[in-house]
Length: 107
Image (cartoon, rainbow, N blue to C red; front, side, top):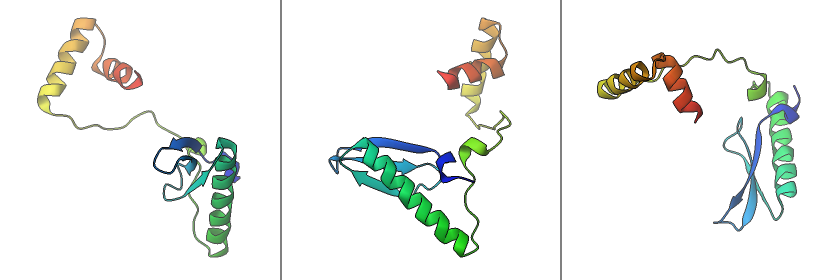
């Protein structure tokens, strides 16, 4: 698996006054740089080094989120009153509760 398949993000850090590179699969890692390009390059280098170290020590490396299969299902526990109100909204809109919840999550 290539480290290029991992999920990278670059954002501005007001506290540090620099761009920060992040990797979703390795939430404890980050890289600060003056430019977004340098932050991305830095976090990719750190991830590459960590993956190489993990492999050298026979540790399992995280799967890239982009390569995982998602079922499209997950459970969410909500208070009974919220469940009732959502069921009422769905009925009033003439859609299933699942369709209403999916639309609200996607918004």
